[in-house]
Amino acid sequence: MLSRIDYRVAPGGQLQGTVNVPGDKSISHRAIMLGSLAQGRSRIENFLEGEDCLATLGAFRAMGVKIERTAGTSVVVDGVGVHGLQAPGEMLDVGNSGTSMRLMAGLLSGQTFDSVLTGDDSLRKRPMARVINPLTQMGAYIESEKAMAPLKIHGGRRLHGLHYEMPIASAQVKSCLLLAGLYAQGITEVIEPGPSRDHSERMLRAFGYAVESGEGRVCLTGGGNLQACDVTVPNDISSAAFFLVAAAIVPGSELLLPNVGINPTRNAVITILRAMGAHIEQRDERLQGGEPVADLLVRGQGLQGIKIDPALVPLAIDEFPAIFIAAACAEGETLLTDAAELRVKESDRIQVMADGLQSLGVEVEARTDGMRIIGLGEHGHLQGGIVNSHGDHRIAMSFAMAALRAIEPVVIRDCANVDTSFPGFAELAADAGLAIEKQVQE
Image (tube, rainbow, N blue to C red; front, top):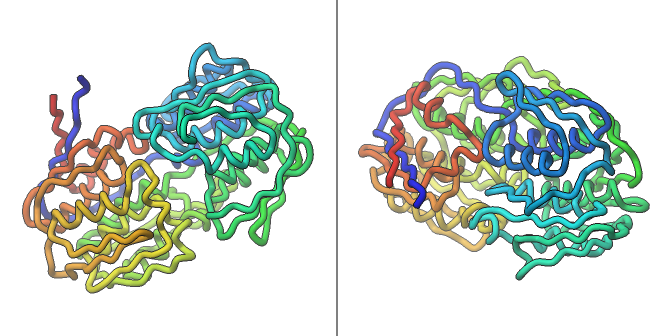
């Protein structure tokens, strides 16, 4: 039986100093994928060595791509070309990574060989119809049970371009279809109902592939090639979000987060926290490998509850567990709507966060598509207690930071999956001032 990892976090404290969070997970995934499909050698710097991205790396190694992890967080990929992947000898297990499964479903649909994509218990419960259905319209043949993994993807299918209007904004669905579009005859065009992260479009262009985008549409023409290039991955704003919130909720905290990606399709967490009154400065803004980055300085001060603009929801979808902690510490009501997508993440993040906040003494109303939180204000305190993360890495890290505003210890159950996205989180948080302890439960 596997050991369970819990966090025990002592109450109070402030965060100070400089924290370098790991490389961006979304960009690390895409760099491995496109580097593998490119012609020539690509070097990836600041690659995120979390379990999710390593699952992507392992899957492409299993399909014949030579990938070497060199000094530190550097990776060298010897691309095999768009049509150079080989049939894997076994199922491709991508662990807990929804990004790996959904994006790879697209590119595997265009291969000449059959493949099977699978993952851990959590990933096998997540909905895949959102990619299976449009890929089927392109000519793919994918077998599954109730549109969930494992996905058996039949090779040798002739794909054709598709005009697809997404029902909800989703970077994973968009990216999946663009990758399938590399192998399709004609134009693949995706229409978005609202903006979603655009890392795939940016990186395809960096690898020399023509992508048109604007006014809610993205399209490419199949049949082209990718050329190797070097990628320097910015630090992950989703990982930085936990530290932004942790410093913002404790007056007197001051934290510098260098080299953080501030892509406008990803930085809504900053917009939301600033709307709540957080002091966040963007210093030395610059471009790094086609992605905007900056050094973020955050100082703690009192926050106010807000009604979150629904237009920001898809641009901060992964950061809401941390944002909910900020709302719990703010003065007055915070209301989130139009965020039903949170119910089909690694856990039902609306219900799991509501349960955890209630156990710490916060007044919360979970709704079908969001949450209403009555914050405790600058001078209020969370209770201590036990929170079940349900194996969701972002929930575990969010509640660890909540202990800064608690009066008793906070224990978070089932935190092993933190390593999927943020290896070394507990150690980095401890260095910044969080009194966190890992506990292994046999």
